[in-house]
Amino acid sequence: MTVELCVPDETAAIEALHNVELLPVASLCPADSPRPNGISHRQAEVLAKSKGELPAILVQRGTMRVVDGMRRVRAALLGGCDSITANP
Image (cartoon, rainbow, N blue to C red; front, side, top):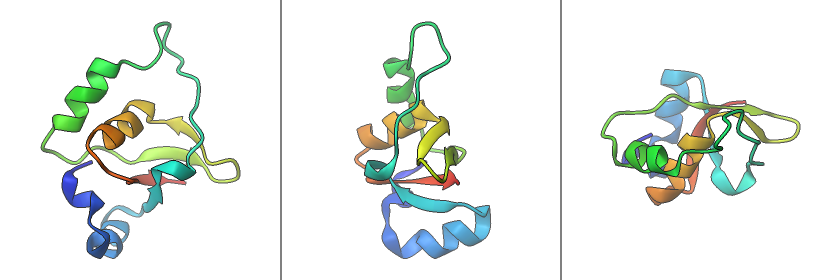
C-alpha cells in the first residue's frame, strides 16, 4: 500500500498489474486476529509509513471478511486511504 493507491485514476492500472481489486475499506468486515495479542497497532503504524507497496489483503467475497491483512487494513486507515488492494 502506498499513497498512490488512494488515487482513483490508477485503479485500472493496479488491477491489471496485480490481478487484484481496489475495495473500499468501509466495506470490509474485520476478522479476529490469530495472534495472541491481537493486531499490532505499532506494526500497522510502521506499515502506514512504508514507502513500498504492500501485498494485497485476502478477502472472502461473500462476507467481505478479511481473511489475511488486518494490519494492512489498519495501516491504510492510518495513511488516510479509503480503499485497499485485495484478492477477493
